[in-house]
Amino acid sequence: MIVAAPGVTDLGEFVGRQVSSEQGLACLQIATAQVRAYVRGKGFVNGEPNAELASVILCLAARYLAHPRQIAMDETKGP
Image (cartoon, rainbow, N blue to C red; front, side, top):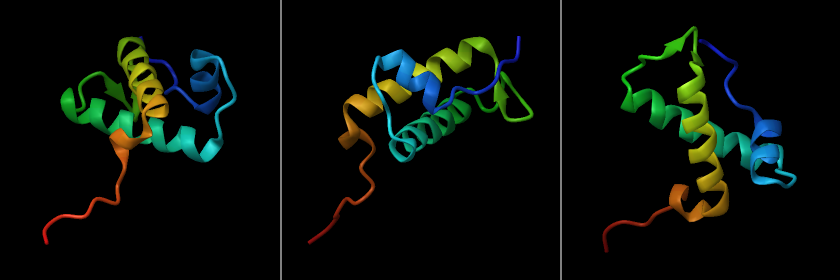
């Protein structure tokens, strides 16, 4: 079964609080990219995940929302 990818409203309902569009989208986009890569695109039709993958995306995005340092992009490497 194919469902719509989770959105910011879904994420807010899942975590039980208001989520900013910017932060919610960032978490959902990264979670979606990771899940898509992990399953090598299987379970996605026209960019939309099946119900099982949508729930994984939502849970992973909630984790990133709670711990945003997991997705920090401004790492300094080297001396």
